[in-house]
Image (cartoon, rainbow, N blue to C red):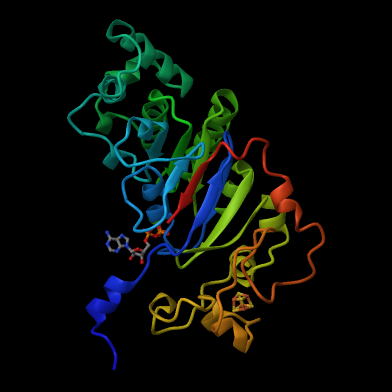
Length: 311
Ligand SMILES: Nc1ncnc2c1ncn2[C@@H]1O[C@H](COP(=O)(O)OP(=O)(O)OP(=O)(O)O)[C@@H](O)[C@H]1O
Ligand code: SF4
Ligand SMILES: [Mg+2]
């Protein structure tokens, strides 16, 4: 007997045993089709969603939402205008972040705001404007300044350029790269744009229906994709997943990609392929794997002192 659909919906796991570690200073790209859970993972990482199981760890210590250390994880959103209070001058928005987290002496905070604006390539005259008086690109710069205000270890940037004009996207990507190099802040960069991910990221994680199916350097993941889903993503082919029931509502002990996979075997419906030490979750990967095991070796040093999401 089938369950009513509303019960089924409740039983669906949006994230299913995601285990992702970001090394200090690392930019990790998170790619995957719409609805795969990228934003949910980002929100979980910064404490805006609580994982039903598992934990977020920073430098090995569990991170509870709302703890003082939570300021070490910040988020930049997709919609530049929607992420600011329309009635607050953008300089005051950045200042508020300093006040809330008691960063610097109150008398020094104005100078800190000015320095943050300079850091993201804005003049102090921009600080006195209201959000609607700035362009999308300028607002994303302010969003970066606000995120940097708390001196975070990591920033989750959820499609930060997708709503911007194509002409300013490269400027913001360059800003993100420069900021990473200058401050050492790590980033989870959520994007649909594989070229942007290749440009920016030290590692790329591919998500499919709430699971990470492949992770590694851009050279391995985008250059020699091993997971059939990644291969399809890289080829730019339209998604042709099985119509009908969402695989997440079926048995968990299965590869969720099996209904759509051209390399599937009967066993793919009976067991979940684990994410192995080379960063692949597939029983019958594409091609031969020369050097594929390098995905783990190329992790920056010190990756034990990292942020880890289990959800
Ligand atoms: N508030 C919510 N309540 C219930 N389900 C939700 C909620 N937010 C998202 N979902 C569901 O969770 C799944 C993952 O959504 P999420 O927004 O994390 O995906 P995404 O990978 O960020 O997609 P996109 O690329 O479109 O931004 C989707 O199936 C979505 O319908
Ligand atoms: S485990 Fe099987 S169904 Fe899943 S991606 Fe690999 S080959 Fe395809
Ligand atoms: Mg999203």
